[in-house]
Image 1 (cartoon, rainbow, N blue to C red):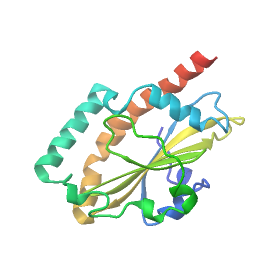
Image 2 (image 1 turned 90 degrees about the horizontal axis):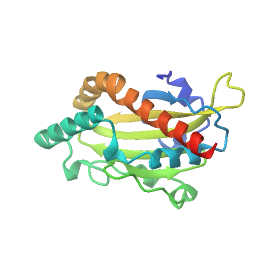
Image 3 (image 1 turned 180 degrees about the vertical axis):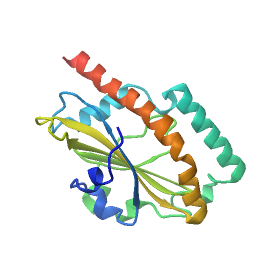
Image 4 (image 1 turned 90 degrees about the vertical axis):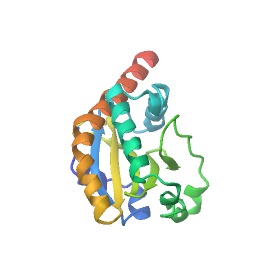
Length: 199
C-alpha cells in the first residue's frame, strides 16, 4: 500500500542523518500480521528464503530485462557511471559502528549493493548515469495495530540532472502499477508462509 512521505520521514531511522540530500520518492507498506517489534530480521530472512532477485514474477522480470537492455543501448549502466566512479558510495558517510557491522549478502541477480543492516532497518544502494538511489527497508508500528509491526520500503533518490528527473518520471507508472504490487504479493506471501511454518 502506498504511504505518504511522512510515514518514512517521521520514523527514527538512521538513514535520515546519512542521506539528507536524497529525496524520498516512494513509500510503500507490506502487511505482516502478528509481527512484533523484534521481527524485522525474521521478515528479512523470510524474504530471502522466498527467492532471490532472479525469481521475481514474470512481468517484473520482463520489465527489468527491458530496462537493462535500454541501459545497455543508451549507456546508462556503464562501469564509469556507478558507485565509486560517478558517485561516491554512502558507505563513506557511515559512522564506524555502521561501517563495521555485518551486512547480509544480496540475493542472486540483485543490482543493489548492501550498505548496512540494523535490527529495524536495512539499506541498499545503486548508482548509474540516471541517478543515485537507495532502497530502505524499515520496521514500523502499525497505526492502531495493537502493537503489531509492518515492513515499509522507501525509495530515496538523487537524480542526475534533468535526464535523471525525466527518467524517474517515466518509470513511475511501472513502479506503481507493476513492480510495487508484485513485491507486495511476494513479500506478504513470504511472511504468511513463515508464520504458517513456524506456527
